Length: 255
Ligand code: BGC
Image 1 (cartoon, rainbow, N blue to C red):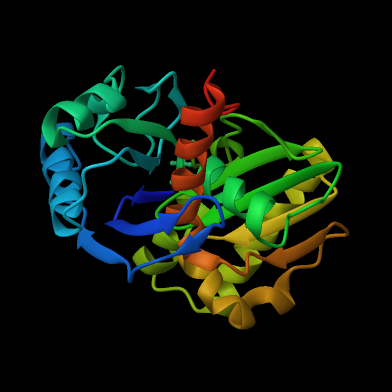
Image 2: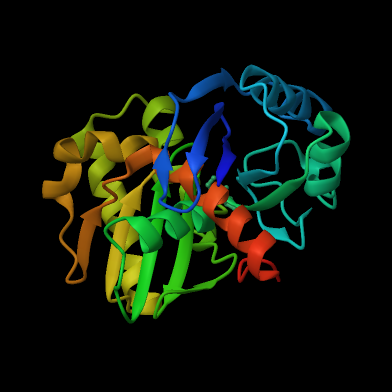
């Protein structure tokens, strides 16, 4: 079944049609910059533009960059604080006229990797880390999603959350080389390893495209691999999650 997958991010909102049974992307991705206000009404309009671009009438799967419980935004992440308590499913359905299934973006990306990518068949605790405006994390135990892991929220030095120091946005803001930023990312991974002892870490999100520039700086014991679906996992994952929710009436993602 063809499903529109949308990846809502702090800097861009991207969508593509996905074959949700095979995890294949069927079209080029369409990207529109996230409105600088990062407020609900403005962002919902961009989501509508993506739906309209594909002339799409079916159900939509959507990865969203905050904690999402039963379709409701529970934290602002890097978006406007007015997102907290907004029912994202309902808002996007109202604005687009399409049915939405919304889940956390990193959980969605992990969902794609665990079903169709490098995480397929991997047992134990597998963590998907997405590097973008924030540091997202999706946790899977024996292939089952443990929703809303928020490893980027660990406080670090003067920062209330380590993602403010080690995400791609910090690299950009401080104009850091990959060498400098990669050391920060490695420090973050060290905390992840210390706190939850994962069996495998999969690195995705926009910056994973530059894997060769920083993977030599990763020194932790745990195996760390690049998500070969890279940034497309953020689009494929929610489409697949949407189909499973429709057909099986459950999405482990939702609290
Ligand atoms: C949010 C997470 C999100 C991550 C990546 C963080 O700021 O707290 O929920 O997954 O950014 O977008």
